[in-house]
Every structure is written in C-alpha cells, then in structure tokens.
Length: 122
Image (tube, rainbow, N blue to C red; front, side, top):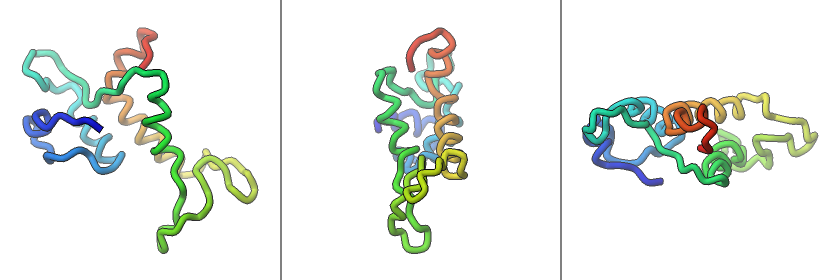
C-alpha cells in the first residue's frame, strides 16, 4: 500500500501506513475533503486504482479471510462465505457485515465517490 507521509504529517496522523482496515477507514474518512496539496481543492481520503481487477485485490483480503478461533488463534476451516460442514451461507453473519461496513467506509472516502456517479470505473 502506498501512502503519503507528507499528507499524514500535515494533518497530524501517525507517520506510518494504516495497520488495519479499521485504521484505513478511519484515516480515509478523516482525510477526505481536506486540501492535501494546498491548491484550494478538497482531496480524497484514499485513492483506489480504477483497474478492473482491483476489486479482487482490495476486497479479497478483507472479505475472504480464514476464520480463526479467537481463543487459540487456530484456523477453524471456515471461510466468510459458507459453513464448511453444511455449506449454509454465512454472508448474513456479523463477520461479513463488518467487513462490508469497513469496505463501504473506505469507498465513501475515496475517488470512487466522484467516478461512480458518472459511470466511470473505480
């Protein structure tokens, strides 16, 4: 992940890239609409590449994680989409909802908010 140390410094954020998706969303929301380059024009909180396949590169690590037992930190064999024993969908579960919530926060603070309404790919 690329990040602008000068922008983080200017706006008083820790001088390191975000470590979690929650930090990324928090920082993107904070930075969104601020002027990062002193041109008088509000800038985005995060810039996502408009490549067609980027959705998978960004979203897969967020949504398609191996679930782990929080006590032992060992993999459960489950994923976020289906129960591996019953094949029942898990997309209505709290983990999937939280992942989508964080993804939506990032999208709303990104260049996508200006590109999508005009039909451009984000």
